[in-house]
Image 1 (tube, rainbow, N blue to C red):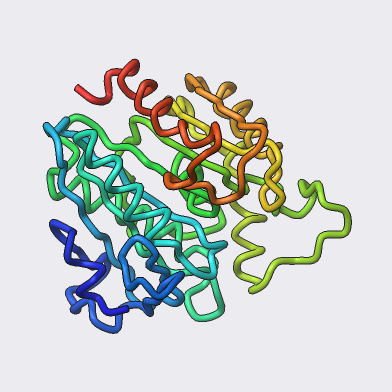
Image 2: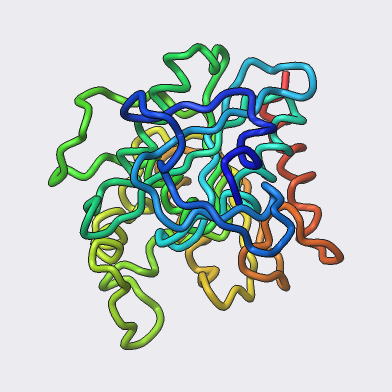
Length: 287
């Protein structure tokens, strides 16, 4: 897959930390042979980028940062990034898909969090979030999204000594919030995750017990029978958000695959985006 396919439907694309062109910034492939942006997968990132999708309905003057999953070793930029951006742009949002670096020996443990924080700064600085800024994260991207609601770890030094813009609302789906952290795992004798920097990220950033106060209104959606990310993560996050003063909307679907995204058909979980849209409307986020 080439970069043209990925960029053809974006309105803008921004590098996070430099002014270099997008070519060779990351490695792009596909889940299948369709060569469609909907199935794009990023397998390595040397220079993170932010892909912008303009509203396709009446603009609501809000922006949202979208963080796809992939276990911090790849990034489902198509299914959990671009497809999500299309949905949110159809509701009037300026939607931004982040292609962030992964935690590894080359980039270090904090790379994805620093990239996400810088993305929020850029979105705000460029004037896309006049009425508010939100976050939508799925799977490992949900852990990263929740991390943006939490305190920055005291033992780390932020690459840019600037606060991030206030987050007005969040959407978190099937994310490993804290069950990968040593001491909080629910799988007996679970082996450390590889690479070591990924395990350290999960050990250090446990958003459910590190949230800033007050936390923003949050929509949380999980599968009760998820074999990859235990549903206890949903309950831990909801409890933590409640303690941090957030209004929480929690939906747990009894039967749904991990990574259900916005394109799973034929199951009750297919309706989660409609529920989320109703929640956003109720909270005045679409006007």
